[in-house]
Length: 81
Image (cartoon, rainbow, N blue to C red; front, side, top):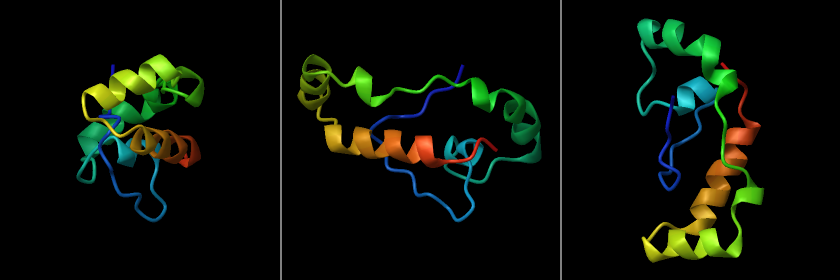
């Protein structure tokens, strides 16, 4: 199981991948060997999950819905690993 803070803004490095995006620092060789085979199986939040109720709940805990949407788009645009 993997989790990425949906409100955190992670920079996208040139030639970055989903695996790189999971870590703040460049993943180690051990992390790459452990997570690379399963990174394609990560289920991500999609725009269809962001109904008005969910957007309201995110705002209530000071998570910017626009940041979440941007992060979804970023994740969808990254290559697996």
